[in-house]
Length: 269
Ligand SMILES: NC(=O)CCC(=O)C(=O)O
Image 1: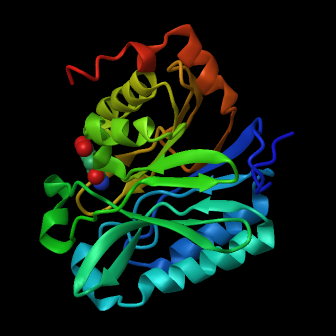
Image 2: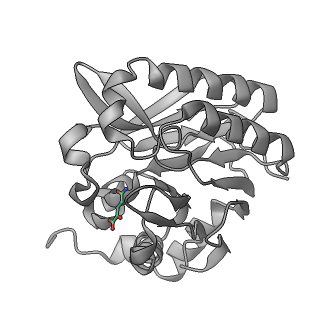
């Protein structure tokens, strides 16, 4: 069985992922936290939970400025849950106030309840007014859970392949993507995620919300894609937990089969 809760450097197999493909109650952290707490109680055993983008508030962007301590409060909840359930959280993203700005920030919390990583969305999505309310981050997307190298990006970031390639060249074997991706562009979502997996020969684990707010209907179709581009698990357009296992050794197998990282012409590009 898997063990990505082993802190040693030993290579592990079959890390079990649980994607919380949830609807989000607009502007109501209490309701959304309540839902995450109840889903954990009923979920199958897993190693890592992935949550969607801005899962506590949705795109209630004008009101985020009144929620100063929101990020720390949410991280505190996730820390308690991580310890109680002995599970890692890639905590989607949560609005974070800092230095007079608000960031769209992914917290990663390990099974011992430590906040081990933060990444603030690098590319703000103007079509959903992010540039009017948020500030872009400048973080490194890379983090490790146990011995596994992940890189985490947020939603619109997946349209920038060179940003993801940079982390892969630095060692990432699995790319994680929390999102609030609208239903009318769900074919872009699926195609871009498959392309990121195939071109980088990495796992792609992507959690999209479902439901609607005043402006958008969101498309679900959360995905776990292997480094060959095969879909291991795919969500519907309704609320559900999506499970799948990833095996980091598979990345090396695929890279032996088609050795793009040996063949690429870094002298040209
Ligand atoms: N929340 C987002 O970043 C949405 C990105 C999106 O919809 C896109 O088409 O890109």
